[in-house]
Image 1 (cartoon, helix red, strand yellow):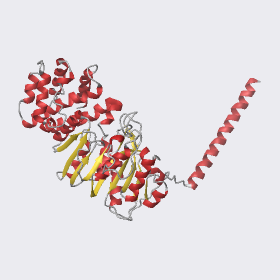
Image 2: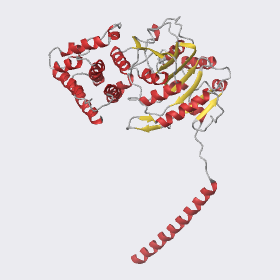
Image 3: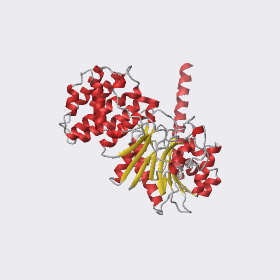
Length: 451
């Protein structure tokens, strides 16, 4: 499979100079999806496309097939029915891509439909990696999604992601709640919604996504969700705060016109049911921001007693950005005396490349298990220097409303065995003395030789 994936990227690179690298996914992934649907329905649609791959009208043929198998996409406010027609890609390039997808050998694969689904999922991530800064706009790294969903543990009800990208949060959530979850999302990029819908179909999910700027045009104004799970854009500047209605019901704190982080958070909170829960990614800077609006809103969140847990992530977790990040978990139905669990997982990153780290499955389970025990109020040791700490809400407010876990967990303690330490020092002294004697002896011999 890996050799095939490498070949596909070589072919995708033929798109260079014809379209921006950030658009490669929009022309390769739909072909995987069309073949997937044809295999699933056992129809001749894909065979017909292969037969006509050199036809001058192949672009419109592909666009028509996408609309046919994704009617929910054509019903959007801004239907994007002409993805290939508007690309101006040469017929030869489209034919090469079609032939490459057609060359996937499914005969040796027992779950051939699942195999195509895996290829689609793999490529979402790897196209993001090739895009650099642009890739992070629509893609959340799998280990971050896994940790976020594992900790939130959605079981039943409505899951809402107001910055849903390609739908990764929905896909991972479905593995926990099975068929008991409903998925709603909003996404500003119309092309990305196409990928999200295809992703949902590939994983057997019925999702509804609306197109629009979430902060300025809330497409679900009356929605109250059981779970909000999201990775909104970090530190959005000039995001249009002046366009907000002064009576916007989402706002319970203040609005920072130069950074949208806390507007996103207020949006999440507004859309939660009275017993709802949220888990989302945020930049580390938002945890301690001294901006008047941010600080005021953070204090209001603490006073509302809805902050449940904060996890500090390793650096280099996200493609194309060095901005350190964290996870915040909210619970709208906490008891008055509930504390906040702070977890410093900043040292849990494992390098997969020079520019990116991941969190291992073992560490994901370790962090998630601690949070589950905390939620179940189990009597275990939560206060571990350098890793985790449970703190009273009033203490956090007293300390300036800072939410950075490392402030509370402190530095990991190093336990020193004094006897072993003394013995090692004594041995080193003996070795040093022997080396000095040898050096002196060599020096004397050298001086005699010179004289």
